[in-house]
Image 1: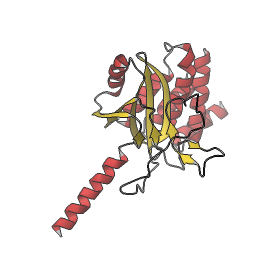
Image 2: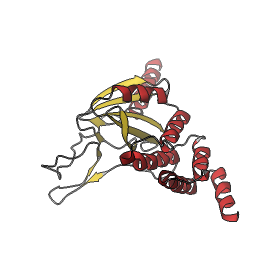
Image 3: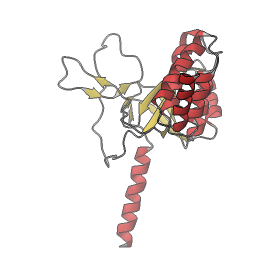
Image 4: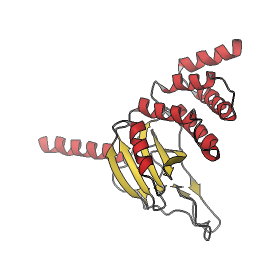
Length: 238
């Protein structure tokens, strides 16, 4: 009996570890414990002379969510599910990523975690991607720093800072801000809705602020939180 219980506990731990580890291939993955997310990302950005990715997972809002890619062309016998993180080879743009068949226990709760990928290049943030935890990833040979133990509130705060950062380069500012606000809307953390409401209520005096406010209002509209409904009612009736 004791051996059976111990085996069950080991199996549960194994499933938990798998749920926290993304299916990343073709990447140099290094796992480290998060301390302060903003500080951790800033430290890694300062070291990013070559392009690299920083990634973490947080609980995702309920609902049918499948943030992933599907690759298909006429020469393929079937579609391939999974995202290529780096640009395709210009000499062979139609070759899809190839992912190994899943192994180990089946994740019954797959697709319930949001995976944040932040791309660093030349010591600055260049891109943000949002994927569900069941989405295979081809990292394109890049380094991936996987942060464990990231709190949902810290992730929301980090994305909120990105969404309102007017110091970013013009060529990436709107793209990163839009992705950051969409990411906040997908967080299950209680701090997500107040952050969206604050962004949706902020004065829209610049092109970035207009885009951010529009994305935030859309995020509030998709929320099931009573606070979101109250905010929308306030907008309609004022």
